[in-house]
Length: 447
Image 1: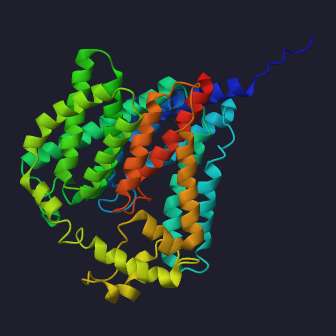
Image 2: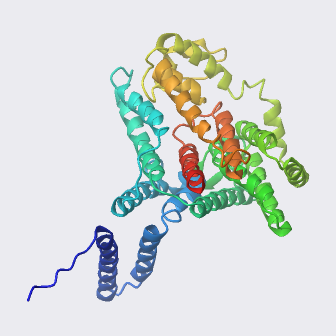
Image 3: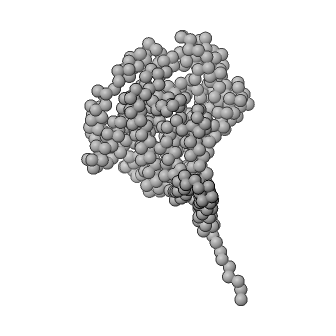
């Protein structure tokens, strides 16, 4: 009699391996609980197993969705008590691992989209700038930090996504923005502000804080989503709730006192008015929001708007003048990734009003030009243009998906905000690029 042969496919092996690992974790923690009598480990057991199960079954909820939700709080979630590695960075690493391993076993990973090659080439050029960088050590640190964002971008966009999963991530981004706005409003009304920023609203916890300008930038994506959903939903109650959410986010942006955030928010509104077919609904929603929000805007915000010219946008204009002089020397190859502050010092005396040394560019495009020269700057612009071309994709000849308008609005909003911030290392900036490519997958799957 021949012995029976049990054949296990890779998919079955993958499922068995998942449950074997989960069972091993349960047994280990249960043993510790019984042996040490520390029942707090039972909570850790439930959380660990639950997170593990969700990451296998619903990776767009955890870890990727939670990662997107927590981005406005990124600076508060430092694992070292100050600047350094954050919890969101750990979630980003976990996201890349989960999507890669799950996709590899399931054989669902696809080739990277053609558009990703431009951002990859840009990153490679930034890495090569170590060779001629003014301060190579700084460049190595900057490139290594960006590498994690690039890997996350490539892995997640190679994984298949459904419309429901895309919408789930949208909701989580919106919830994250709403939570950030509500905490900002609560802290501001209770006098919890950071004095170095002139009493502007921000997220502050102990000695940790999120810069007001960065907070405003991180709320642009939730803002665009809130506008889109308020226009899209037909039920009156849901429209009212979404309008209140929109109002809270807009008010939160105003409290940050970010002029770049205000300009970006106005850009988002203009894009919606230009591309949306529901202009009347949009107008009604914003009239309601304006009536509620404008009377509550603190006086310091209008003072900041009035002082924009006299203060040269808080010295940014003077920094940009110096940056143009720096380009005379570094326009071809650049000074090396993340070397702007150092080469700025060399030309700081050219500022109409001296702003000190080691100053940041406060401008994504000027920084890219100075650090990577005409070649790197061109690669960045081409990469952004290629991502925007994706948003011109049509479901059919006559219709345009509402999510495309939402993404177009936040795309242009972030580009405008990048005129006054160095946003390339912001996780929210990379999240937008990821969502653009995921949305392309959704559109193609529905054709």
